[in-house]
Length: 348
Ligand SMILES: NC(=O)c1ccc[n+]([C@@H]2O[C@H](COP(=O)([O-])OP(=O)(O)OC[C@H]3O[C@@H](n4cnc5c(N)ncnc54)[C@H](OP(=O)(O)O)[C@@H]3O)[C@@H](O)[C@H]2O)c1
Image 1 (spheres, helix red, strand yellow):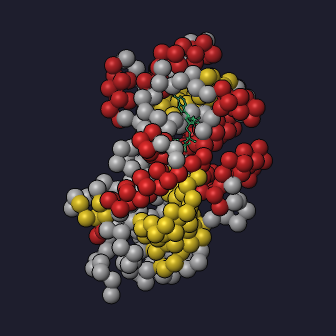
Image 2 (cartoon, helix red, strand yellow):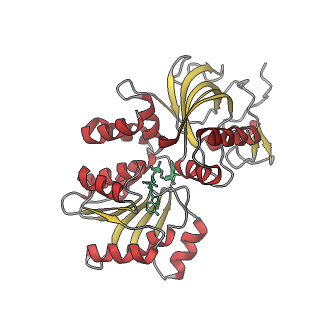
Image 3 (tube, helix red, strand yellow):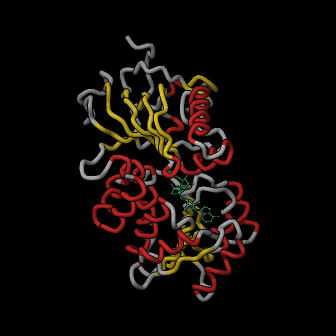
């Protein structure tokens, strides 16, 4: 008999404080690894820490693996989940199914031993870390011995056989970004991808070029020369702008120069740092659309900032989920050998 009577499909039975909220909003959740009848218990192999969170932790404690490991252990010990208290973001994990709760058996396509990636945030996932094995500072991933719980409504993807596990983990972490880009970008559009040299940014640049086509124009933005060179070499960005997105006026001027003053029809924000809302707004034309995928986005800064400069733009919160997003993202690697090579070099 499980300690959880009448477990909720959303996991509210595990909320410790404050009472009455959902697990993502909770400060602390119950991470005892005794699954309720409607939960899935996972043996965790690797955590993929959300880039905004990992960047913030490095800024706070430095880039030494031992310091990062100590910080992650401390957060999980306090909160029962890897929920960064500063950025509010999480990440996701890969592992193997250990137990499928009795109430789910036969209702879902999982059996013990299946290798899966969770597609819900670590910021709501009960997690216990027994041991941190390796901190991969260069790719925001941490190998652990540990266990996690997936709630009844938790999304997951079975890991594909044809793509290395850690590459799939990296791609699935940001799978919502290219899927939303596919919805937003139309033939002939001018698209600005801020943070276009990063993980989600690269996928968005690729997807945007596919959708905007030869009559469209895709502009990748990064403050770093190496990122810009790589964007140019990959060939999906029509232009790579070396600008710091925190310098809103510089970004606007550069985009205006490239577009004859028209600015972007669609701007996709994929950065891992704060204070890029105004750059996104000023780089976008009146009536254009901005997709804030970045978890470092401030809703207040975006809303009041747009109002403050009298810009009527549609701003979209970066919902990390879009139906079919996992398969969509993995298929991008299958269709583009160049994309696959790049991601395997960086994350395999
Ligand atoms: N909405 C969701 O569900 C969801 C899911 C996962 C991730 N995210 C968020 O999406 C964002 C991107 O994630 P990711 O994994 O793609 O991160 P990433 O690979 O670290 O990419 C971020 C990129 O932004 C660049 N950048 C840094 N400072 C910049 C600046 N001042 N101007 C322009 N570009 C700058 C980074 O360059 P360097 O790396 O060279 O510094 C990097 O290339 C993060 O905020 C992450 O938290 C959201």
